[in-house]
Structure formats: structure tokens, C-alpha cells
Length: 300
Image (tube, rainbow, N blue to C red; front, side, top):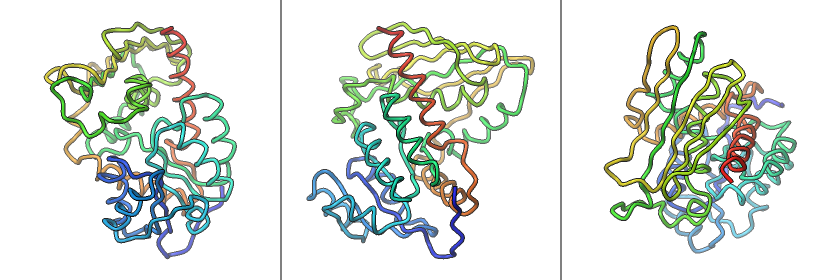
């Protein structure tokens, strides 16, 4: 990977205009002192124009023109639209700040890994960049002797009583909790317990799934994932058990996704500057996709 040593801000373009781009990606990129938000592209030009105006930048009608004008791209698009556009950007030598999952097919994820060999990349797994959760994950990753653990991400964006801005997302409705919040669970379990060698699964109500994982370390773990639970039943929990005793994930939303995304920008800029890969790069993102694809097959 080549490094970027210039003191000037990294010129970055935003692909996507949905709620996540409006609430998190766009404001964080516009405010970050290390980036210059050059422009916004979206599948709906009128939405790109509106968001660009809010962020005091330029709308682009042509995605390749935006890619040509920047050092890096940030993507807030459905995964199967993100993947091919990220491949195009990486082949043009642009660094990547992606969302999870990087793709929903193993082939798409592998193509992205090949394309991004010579650029910096960071995938925004929220817990891995949270001021509350990230230090806890790092601390547990440095310990041996884990026996078992669980991470449950139980959401309610499709519950009848919920009012979520993400409920209109076609890809979330189609792919369900496995693909939307499964990456978050794996982003905690993989660094602590090691790679996954075996996956089994059971479907619950609506889109709820239960996975049991065997890890390379010999430890086992479980995760329950849902986007359709009753609102009062929703929440994010993690518990690890081993020779050290029992430890639980601290409250994760204290700093909010906007601050966490700012930390992800920091991570990308550091990787650009040093040429050193980040633990949450596209290779890690691709491995998460591979595990989720195996889980999906097991659930059939």
C-alpha cells in the first residue's frame, strides 16, 4: 500500500444520499479537519443536490467524475451497490471508507479485496470505533483463556410501534438482520475468539436468527440478530466468559454514531499516512461477508 504524506486535507467524495449519509457520513466528513468534502453523488440527482447544499459542497451527476476529483471515497449505499462502485474507485487508486457489509456475495467481496490491494481502506463497524466499546474489545482481544461468549443485536426498526428512518431501506427488508446487524456481532466476536471454522443456525420469528459459531481458538460463541423485535425488547448486549471470569460490553451509545464515524475517518487518514493496514480493512470486511454467506446457507 502506498502512503500519503501531504499535510493538506484528504479530498474525499461521498456516494449516497440516504438517512445514514444525511445523519452520519455527510456531517462527519464535512466537519473533519483532515478531510475536504469535494462532492456528493447519489442515485437520485435531486437528493444529491439537496444533500450537497446542506453540506456546503457540490453535487455530481457522474460518479466517475467525482472519483476522478478525489483522493478517497466514502460510501453510504446498499452493499451490492457499494461493492462495484468501491471496486471502480480502488482501481482508480482511491482510498476507501466503506460501510458494512462490504458486499452480500463472496465473489463481490473477493473482487473488492483484489481491487483494493494498493489503497487504504476502513470498513465502519460501529462498535469497533465507539469510544465506549472499542477499548473494551481491544482489552478482551489481548487476553487468552476465553471459553464462550455471546453478542446479541436485537433491533426493532420493522416493529409495528417503531418509527425508524431506516425502515424504508429495501436492502435491509430483503436481507434482514443477518446481513444488517450480523456484521456488528462478528466485529466483536472475531477479534476476541479468532476466525470462525463452523457455523450453525436457527431461524426465529420474522427475520430473527440465532447463530452458533465454533472458532479457531476452540471457543464457541452465539449471537441472536433481529430487526423485527418489539421495541421494548430491543437492545445490544455482549457477554464473554473465560478464565478471567465474566465481562460485559459497556453502554455503547454514549458517544453516538457521528462521533464513532469521526474515529473511523481518523483511522482511514492514519492508514493513508502510514501505509499500514487497519484491522477493519476490506479484508476483514470480506471475511465477515464469507461467514455471513455460510450462515445464510446453514439457515436454509
